[in-house]
Length: 424
Image (cartoon, rainbow, N blue to C red; front, side):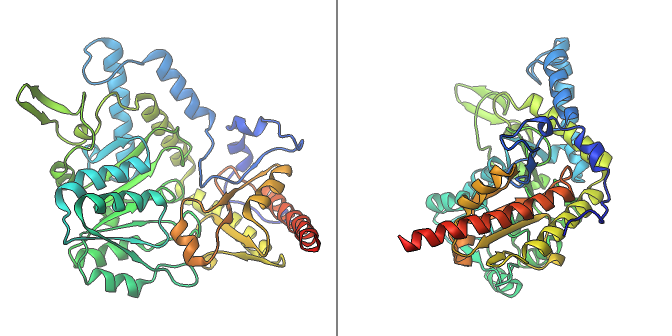
């Protein structure tokens, strides 16, 4: 059974014409079905063109120069900051800090806020579904400050255990750091409800929105979160740039994570004073062209509509979910379709995820095998690794057909290989 009778809310063929990677030949002779968007997304020609134009016509270092090119580059860079602020409904562009990525943004909070305000009597709460980027920085903070790191468990169906979360919050942790959407389970956490609950206990909230911002409308003002982070490369933008949103009073109170040019106000032989936020967190030459690329990616997504993209991905994920569950020995991880986004992770009895991915690659289908930087989550699930298909706006129902057919082939092939090993 195929998906030929279903319709999608997007003009996918028009969208696909913007992506050159689809013209790349695959050794299988087939086009590439790129279903590894949870790791990184591809780039439309519009983003690449904007970056190329910046390099060719308006590139120089920013902020300090008074010549034409420097002023043009500074204007492009700061205009990109405003585009990001508008995109996530930040009250001001000064609450947007450009970083090297989502990981760097979380580390900026852990080091800049945590080292100043967290002590040995405090606790940082995270959840069992967190990416390592939202776990390791808090353990590093624990090593320097002596604070505790507390994990909020998930339920057997892959949702956050809200009763356990409330119990943790009654102990008044200093910060709750959690993902908006699990990069493995696809679970969508009720962030606004969680923020309200955490604030009632005096707990700040950091939201890792790396898997949310590219796929659904995000309004930081409506959510009420204290910090929010995401990466450019997961929303059609370049690598090397991420975003930290923070409430103004928190950013101003934080110490800068890095020191050097760009983040200072005055330097003398007696010491230095910092610039105001966000500049004080952007030491050295910032990601100028990458910021332009990020703004172009935002423009591209907004022209299509985040609501339309989310609806598109849900149709693809629903189809994959329903059809993969019919394969004997295959188990899909995570909650029911009502509580997940466009991520479908699965395990096959007796078959390693890396072997599955290798077979799928022979079909021209790109997925991600492994623990997906979520070892605590995989330990909670009782598995070493999983296979993940993650969808985006340029994916099609025909690619879901190819995914299912390739997984069926992998199941048969690898089951036979497993039986041969048992005989020997």
